Figure 1 (cartoon, rainbow, N blue to C red):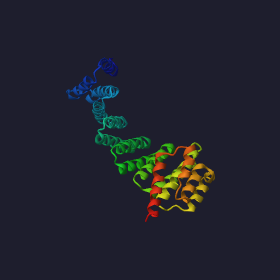
Figure 2: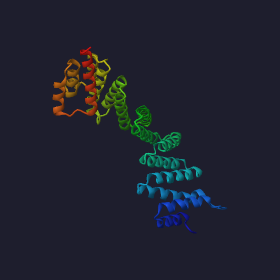
Figure 3: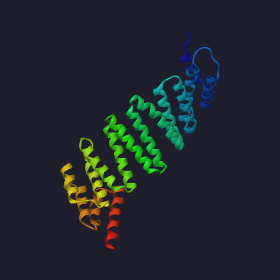
Figure 4: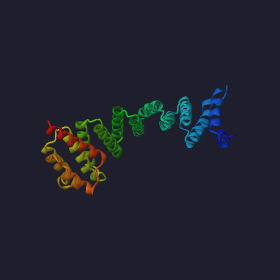
Length: 287
C-alpha cells in the first residue's frame, strides 16, 4: 500500500517555488473526487507554501497561504490547527502592516482558543493586537487590549506576563495623562512585585513612579509615603524614596534629580513626569 502522506511530502520537497505549491493546493480543491478528501489533499500544499513564503519574508503572500490553510483545517474540523493557522496569518499581516486583516485573524483565532480554554494563547494574541494599535498610535485601543491580555494571563496564573502587561498599561496611562489611573496601576505593580522574590527589586522603581503620578494629579500627601514605607520598609532610605520625598517638599528639586541621576540614570517616563510637576508648580508661582 502506498503511503499517501509520504508521497505528498516527497512531491512538495521537490517543489521549490511557493507559488507552485499554492497553485497545486488550489487545484486539489477544484478537482472532482469520488473518494478521499480534497481538503486533506490541499492542506500540505498550503502549509508548505505558507512556510516558504514566510522564510522568504514575503509576508502578504504568507498570510494568504495561512488563510487558505486555516480554511482546510476548518473543513477538516481541526479547530486548534485552524486557530494556529489564523494566528500565523495575523502575524504575517502584522509584519507587512496590513493591520486590519491582522486584527481580524488574531480575533478569529482567539474565539477558538477561548472556547478551548487556552488563555495563555489568547493573551499572546491580545498583546499582538495591542502592539498593532500602538503602532497605529491608537493608545486607548492599545491600553484596552493590554488590559484584556492582563486578564487572560491572570486567568491562567502567568504572573510574570501579567505584570509586564500592567507595566505597559501604566505607561500608556501616563502618555494619555491619566495620572490618577497610572498612580493606581503603579501601586498595584509594587504590591504584585512584593509577592515575588524575583521581582522585589523593581518595587522601589514602581513606588517612585506611583508617587510622581500622584504629584502630577495633586493628590500626593505624607500618608502616601507612609503607605509606601509599609509596603517596602526600605523605601524611605533608598534613593527612589529619598528623591520622591525631596520632590514633594521642594519646588526647585533640580539638585535632588542631579544627585539621583549621577548614580542611576532617570528613565524617559520619570523625566516626563518630573517636567510635568515642574511646569505645574511654575504655573502656580506665576498666577
